Image 1 (cartoon, rainbow, N blue to C red):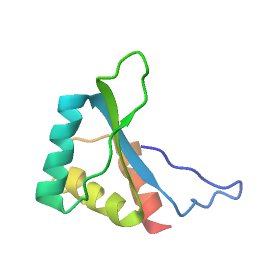
Image 2: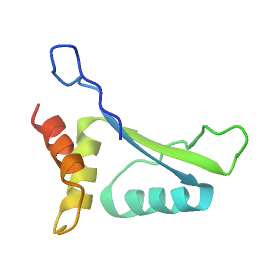
Image 3: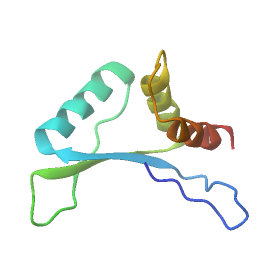
Length: 93
């Protein structure tokens, strides 16, 4: 996930998350998000010229960030605390 901030520390309004993996794995994740959580189907980005089977799924916008946050942290007992806090910082700014 990528977050950018301004020199004054405020988070830039446009936020996004991305997941990179092999084509079939990422298509499976995208289908799951589309079918179960009302994400839109997006074009997968091929970022690795030597490995066309490696693709990146990318979503942007606070609405999608909030949906993804709720998906991965709802009822979660094991997670990376710093990543969860970064999500919360973005969602509360």
